[in-house]
Amino acid sequence: MKLKSSLIALSLLSLSQGVWATDLLQAWQAAATFDAQISAARNAQIAGQEKATQGQALLLPKITLSGNTAYSQTDYTPGRGPLTDTSANGQTYGYSLSAAQPIYRAEAFAAADQLKKQTDLANVQYRQAEQDLILRVAKTYFELLAAQEKVQLVQAQKQAVGEQLAFAKKSFEVGVATITDTDEAQASYDSILAAEIVAQNDLAVKSSAFSLLTGLNDSQLATIGDRLQPQSPIPNDLASWLQKAQNSSLSNAGQQLALDIASREIDKYKAVSAPTLDLVASYGNDWTGSGLSRSGSTDQTSSGAIKLQLSIPIYTGGDRSSKLREAAAKKAQQSDTVEATRRDVEQATKQAFLGVNAGAAQIRALQQVLKSSESLLASSKLGREVGVRTTIDVLNAEQKYYATRYDLIVARYTYLYARLLLAASAGELAEKDLIAVNEWLLK
Image 1: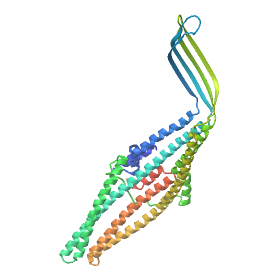
Image 2 (image 1 turned 30 degrees about the vertical axis):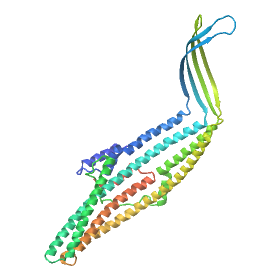
Image 3 (image 1 turned 45 degrees about the vertical axis):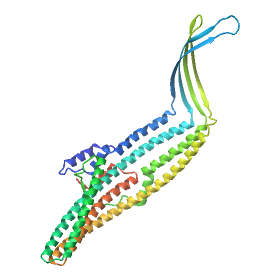
Image 4 (image 1 turned 90 degrees about the vertical axis):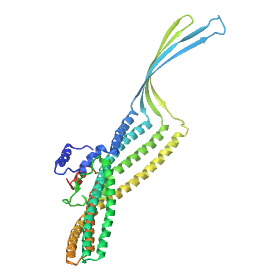
């Protein structure tokens, strides 16, 4: 997928601004040149382009030039008559030039069409690889951001709970709090220490995955902001998206081409027993140098011909019949695969469509929950100061606030990824979709 110069300039501009952060678009650009899977897919497409050329070659003339040389010796002794021995020996040379143009070869016609469809399949598979790269980069990018946010939230929780623990201990010492408050704060603090270890380990794994995919350092990544609000799919109609997926899904297209290729395989073996007709032209020269018992000579023979050559296969030892049955079974297998893929695409489209709508609703709901959690935390702290709330109440309010904040961040990532999945299921996922998602990031 080629990048426009304007987009490259836009990326460079974002780097030149205050924070040198890598955004999603730049991560995808880096992966397009660094990732081994997309490189392999690109080479597979190049190889697949040759299939169509090979198919055309089956219908074009074949020209062959051949030559030969040999040494021969002949001794002859007559049985009657005068006693005379005759011997001949010498070197022979020759060459021939032949050309054959297929006129009717049913098997070649089927094979040529099959090879052309293999080129079409290679193109579809590369487009799938391009879409898969966008999804892999987005998934890895969002998972890394979520892991980074998890570490930051756990550390913020640790600091807040640590402060509550210190406050509880001090309050217990002066006799204004019970030992239960101190024990609860200590238990919460120890639990957060364990959660921090898990979060740090998960971050290391996600960071490694991102670097292996893009070759980039993950120290500065553009994070998601809240200046944009989620929207429902356009159109917000599941039936329309299912129709798009049925007509344009690359998975469906690839499997249908594979079915066409399997069908042509049957046609090839059906045509093996069909007559073939070729136009054949040939020309050749042979030279023979020989030595007789008393004299030597050199002979030259020239020949040329143009003919129609008809061949009718009679019996192939059962090979054709066996391969025909095999091809028929493979076509039936591929037919089942086409139907299974169609169902998978339908399910994936439904899931992505519902994911976008549910994600948008979840984000809006969590935004309200976050506001409520902030108010609850503030009122809990104030209530503790005036004696109507305990340290446990404050700890619970802080846990709810931080959990809601993290859930909101993850919900945004999940929503954006669902948008990409929905476009991919309909065969529409491209650079423009990645640019739209990239607008959500703080650059």
